[in-house]
Image (cartoon, rainbow over all chains, first blue to last red; front, side, top):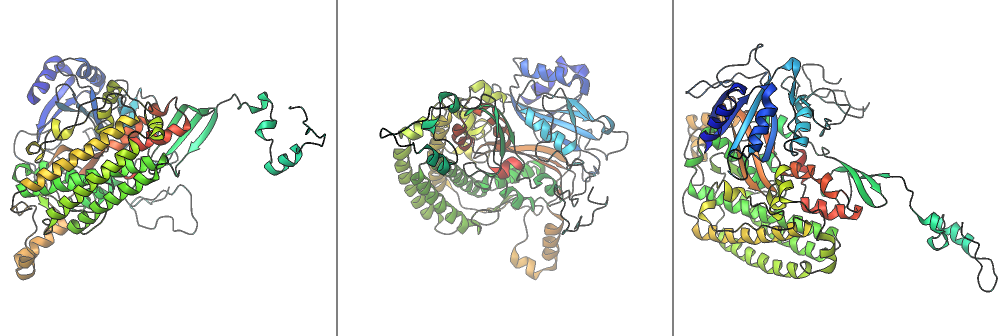
Length: 194
Length: 427
């Protein structure tokens, strides 16, 4: 079943697919950003695909990506080499499940740093509403066409996107400034407090 | 204004005194126009710290009288940066963090994290049978504690205090057993990559059997108290209903989706561990309202007891940790007596389990549904990215839709049955 999904996807939308791969039994398809909505609509509506159930949305920041001990085999696009300036920095991953056929797929979309936006899939799967907000909150990816793109875990005044690799873990941004506490108790490479 | 009233004897009315005491007019003294609520919509803040809410979540309600016409649910008050912290911890050090995701069923989180790392390392088929059984036993015990807490707390919020005490008593028996096994009452950190940290204690099966018998007895009492209780049914039945199609589209899984008639259970649809070897049923509801969610949870609890009884019969002898130097620590005796083992122990603790580069998504059936971990590994001992697909977060996103059109008081059972766990929802 698993190979069938990727094959059918390549057959129907060959022009929109950059590459496909299978890692540890998970099917992954790399989709061109401008055709993401068309491919996703097809995945949902085609009766042989019927990906009706959304699972998750997340993003991967490849800024520090320097893999070691890469398993042998056919070269996988991001895993085979380190991240360089000319490669898109972010990957947005959508995991889908079909409740009828029980198969799963992860569609991925490469997103460059200077234009960090992807089309929103909330109109197809309402569950992605909050998960896209979460991805926006944590990685700063803008979802075009999202009905309500606000921060969800953090507060409106928060500066920066905490799960990006260039956001230091030690950085503190208290919402209420307290004079009795040092501004940044732990040293941070970029100066800590805004 | 109401006409000034006088008592039959002609004395001046006590209205002024009443007004003085109450600080406002009494309802009986009001005219019809005065009694009406203001026609404009009102904004009410519920939470973040509300006695009838599980966890800290804020809801900004727009109410028309007492009816909710719009709401904005705002999670995030318990955000503890699980994903960021995990990127800086070794794979083994993430286990204590997973305990704090869904803190009423920590063992299931432990198992989920172990499974994703094993999937990345290709270790899944090599996990010893006994370790798999131990994992299932502790997972099902955790599922029971999860459902006991959910049902107990919801019943208490609707005024039924006795079942709450009964159910938490049962939960405590299970916690005591889990404490004996793992050393910690709540945050167990018992599972490891490649197995579990140590074997079950001697006499565990007798104690668990006794405990399950007691729980089965208590469940009969609790069902007698709740199932046909007029107040309980009136507050639960027909409240917060969800259709099957809505449940699929909004990503609902677990008891909520099953109550809506969606027959999806990871243990059956994508069998993992030793679940194919045990026999159990997946309860499915019809109406998808709060009462069905309650019934599904009660039935799942009984099915978990059934699974546990089978596991105790079928559990084989053998090791509980895979014999693979990549993930297993050297024996304590060797660590203290040979330099090679001590170095390996040190490297294992300091550098972590080396996971080859790649990515994987592994998922288990948690107390609330599909609990998944998505990990990107870069070949070092720490995850490059760790993402948790928390069912509570997805379920909470439907809350706004579920409470729409209901009374403010109905928010309590709806939230109780969504069973939002703050730690899991806010990561």
